[in-house]
Amino acid sequence: MISLTSSKKPDKYYAILEGALKVFAENGFHKSQVSRIAKEAGVADGTIYLYFKKKEDILTSLFQEKLGELVEKFNQAVGEHMSARAALMKVCEIHFSELENNIHLAYLTQIELRQSDMLLRQEIGLALKRYIILIENILERGKREGSFRPDFDVKLVRLLIFGGMDEVVTSWLISGQKYSLTAQVGPTIDFFMKGIEP
Image (cartoon, rainbow, N blue to C red):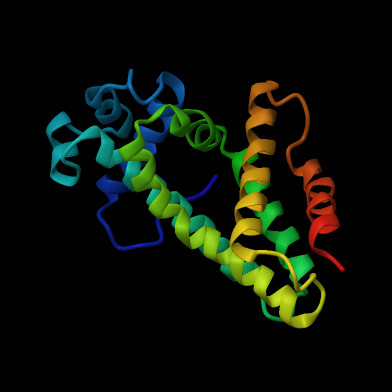
């Protein structure tokens, strides 16, 4: 499970986010009550409003924190010494393993996000930007080192890679998690490589 303890915000802030993650995943964002989140977090209802103006703010903050921690894991694991191919594989491995190990986060990112209104999805999309840029940087590095073809559109391919990983996770969830998500890393990367390696 991804931890929410990396920055210096108050413990109650993180308790609320963890409570919200569980409540949103189990009940759906629209059916989740702030009072239920407060109960799950072990705080008074009014405490929620010390940190968040409305329920939508909890959701966007949750995505920002979780995706920020995911990108930090990528940055720690992906070094300049790695080939671009190995770096992409590491990103896919972390993406799949983190969601496989945190089913509430998987449901939130794969199911609930798709049911949110467009404005909320746009706000959450801003939180995704660092992740997309990370993939872009790996693709650019692959081009520079000659391990990737020089003629593909990096901005398009970064979205195809993210979207492909996203869909693999969604299909795994819809199947009822009947197989290992992390076992899909190799075949997923092999598929991507067929399109971008020379």
